Length: 138
Image 1 (cartoon, rainbow, N blue to C red):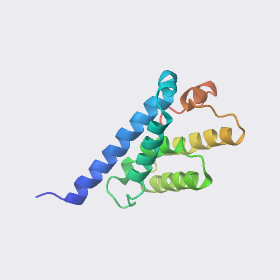
Image 2 (image 1 turned 45 degrees about the vertical axis):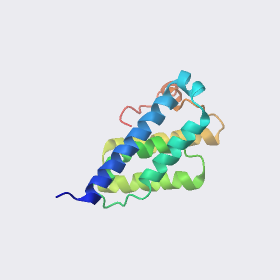
Image 3 (image 1 turned 90 degrees about the horizontal axis):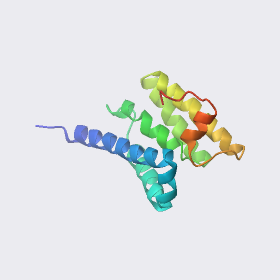
Image 4 (image 1 turned 30 degrees about the vertical axis):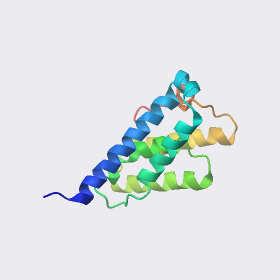
């Protein structure tokens, strides 16, 4: 016998990581960023959100969604989506106060601040390296 909800939860968590990995590779590799159609990235971004958003805080795999949430957050451009990301990361911190979650929150605030100043580029990984931001744990 198996628990269908548990398997579905694992599947969704794994899917979120797979989608986030694909998006991260595209975002952090300038040659790919130039070649991959915008529609592909838009689809990945929407799929990450659609995968993460229905997962409740009491899901046993909720605590494993910090990294995909962060990667999604690097693409969030509206106040509503940024608030959703911050709320989710803060709920994750409440469940498991791991340092990388605090780093994720700080790093997103830096990226979003650069957006507000009109200084954000498409390659956020290189931009953080240029700013000497320590985001290894993210």
